[in-house]
Length: 352
Image (cartoon, rainbow, N blue to C red; front, side):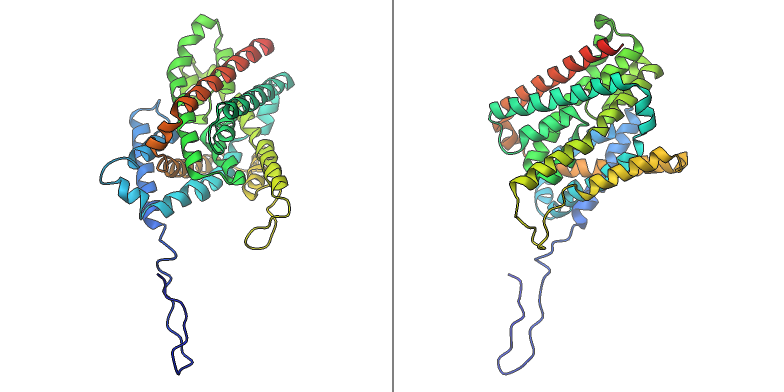
């Protein structure tokens, strides 16, 4: 128990305050997250089709269950890993805005914009409805719906910031979305021929249906540079949908907690600061004032920050707990995958 300032009998002096146990150090966890990022980067360099962000999640899950390490992960490292999963995620999402070329997105045409909006809406509301019908606990339906409809783990992290979701719900949702997105890298290229898609059409389908940006790149590059360019642009258009979605969730949470103030006495902001930063970064990218070297450097920093954040989130996954809702979560994941793939495929054919 920490010592409090207590008057000494017969004197005006007080005993010193020991707060060391009240403020656990984040450095052990941050150091472990850094080590996980270095390993994930090395794996990606050796196996180019394995996105660094995906590997980071897997390593985080593994670290939480390896005998001899799991005690450290759940004990001294927990404060730093939780810090990485939240604070570093916010900074990474802000930098993600620098990858969003609004002028490039608009060149795809309003028909494609409408198609992407329809895919996002159908996937989000369909997954949310089904998740609640299946009785998934906590915010899992909301988080899984967000991850499948927008941009995987990054979107889950953004929405969890404004919804105040439990760390375990966030971690299990990230694990499920990451698993399905990784499977897409192997499955979708096999379907291009049977579905009769040209390379640009395949790229648009991948961009509209695969979750994480790294997974989109890994999947679309199998059909060549034409498919890859289309996939990235469509994917960035989906990323642009993150801002209104997060703002809507923040508004909903604020409405439910109307009159409730934060511990500092202030009401929560209607739009989180990191969302405003994301928009500011996208606007700065659109001005063209940033040189290519700066954008490449920002992209590298963004990847490293998100990798550290996802390692932290992965380390919060508790497989026995996940297994208790595993069948329902797996069913929801497969259904959401079918919805986003089917609706986006129809959209690509209509806008071809």
